Image (cartoon, rainbow, N blue to C red):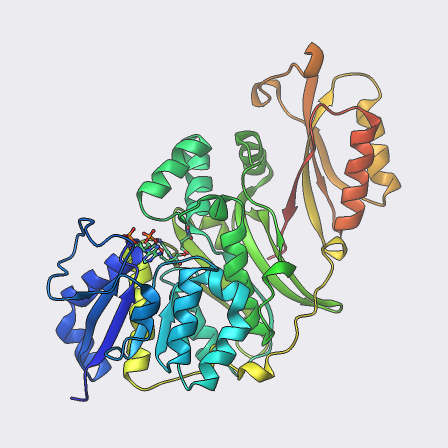
Length: 439
Ligand code: NDP
Ligand code: HSE
């Protein structure tokens, strides 16, 4: 067998701990698959004394992850700390400059600095692998970077955040509260250190920015992603969606259009009979539309120590076997500048929920506003009283919930119509608007 591959592991929490357990449980098999022994020679974490679920006796502890990154003994720096700036970025840059290969699960870091880090890796002849950064255990980076290289990809989309999908599934299936299910997702190790990254849609946006670069060979451009989270989704929306034949999922969608690439993250109505609507719990799903292959869909666990360690391990084994691929599937200097399609030009159907004062003329005025902005309605219904809790609005006025579904229209038209409806004073609260995705 060839020489040992020596790892320096920074971060031994949910994912790092999962990786250590995998290495311990499968040592002989992994060594055989990699054709060389793989060994963690040093670790770094915030606390040296914290009780760990793995035995680290005999493994050197390096307090400073940046020092570990350039440690002469290691071949590969495995970054499982997280964060777009700070110690994770400093350590990854230091490792690449020292010619060490890097494996990371840090989507925030790559979404913000992907193109620059890819260039740095190439300059120093190092690998920068990030399978675990997108969709947890689903090997989608490998699929796009290796398996679909013959294709022109027109769209990549999916459920990319396990925490949000877990919350939406439990709210829908068990009628549980948002806060209660979020707490459970945190206890399971699914959520980010700051869970607003999950529920605010930013984690999905980080992953989407990486998928966009892989699929369209463009420089990562996180700032160009339109982002809405799931915080505003209520049981009333989930129930109305069900009645209309939809489920609500937080989707990330990157789409090539005539004016540029649309990158958007938002709660989305998907027809109940589609595969993506039935991806439940912590599972993720990534769909890729290629011109030669057709439509490919991958489904699997999107978060948690085990699935993420599986993805990290595959990156390590690739390096052990000697394979160094360009980070985003193409040399960094050939990544094209990202050209943004304007969100206001987005076209699709919309679900709109309004809390309307129950008075004559309100319904007609709303329908008129939609017509004025060229929006054709597929349906407009007043919800049954039993599906409409809290029928008293501000100042004790009676109100009713009205749900509209539009035919295909533009984002700009819908926003203008809703702003006009709010100005007219017939509604008790900000209108809820959820996009319907054509799948
Ligand atoms: P955890 O919070 O569970 O673990 C973070 C680890 O980093 C801990 O061991 C912590 O040390 C260590 N750490 C934090 N700050 C420092 C520092 N300044 N110096 C040294 N070590 C530090 O996070 P996760 O394992 O959940 O996530 C790690 C990465 O993996 C993140 O980038 C995350 O986005 C990504 N990821 C997570 C997934 C998941 O399901 N959890 C899935 C896919 C990707 P200590 O233990 O002493 O506190
Ligand atoms: N917090 C992330 C999620 C972890 O819930 O999907 C996996 O990237």
